[in-house]
Image (tube, rainbow, N blue to C red; front, side, top):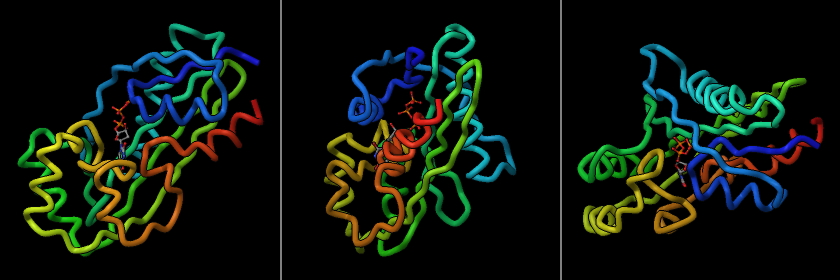
Length: 184
Ligand SMILES: Cc1cn([C@H]2C[C@H](O)[C@@H](COP(=O)(O)OP(=O)(O)OP(=O)(O)O)O2)c(=O)[nH]c1=O
């Protein structure tokens, strides 16, 4: 088995990959995540996951590199990490009493093979009031997360229903990764 490198700075992704194997290194892939106008959310996360994996693979061509990218999609719009508390609040207000989608693109890349796949979930939130949103934003938890929330953290209480892969929401579809690894 080749050495596995997780092309990520996300502590969640590291924790979840550790459920599959302890034998991997972590290297953040600093790529340009600007959204190309007109790109579909699906193509965007797939492309970003490919670019993260390719960025590290260039330096370590003997390894198997894993890259992921996660966004929230609402009304066809791609929502990434909020730039400030105000934007986090506006994003959370938009989810209130509605269903949005979370997409995670996944790429596994080695010299012999590349697999790129999409994992997704539809998430319905309860109605959220302003005090609830303000208190959550004040914790800072939304700031490093796509879509301005962490389902595994304080936003757990906002969730009415999830259809799909819970781990696509957290940013690392661990079951899908495990399946893909079998073919390497
Ligand atoms: C919606 C949601 C996102 N997130 C996180 C997962 C990802 O870390 C982050 C999505 O941003 P990404 O840009 O996909 O990833 P990242 O910058 O954190 O890490 P890297 O690019 O180095 O791999 O949002 C949660 O932890 N919980 C959630 O419920």
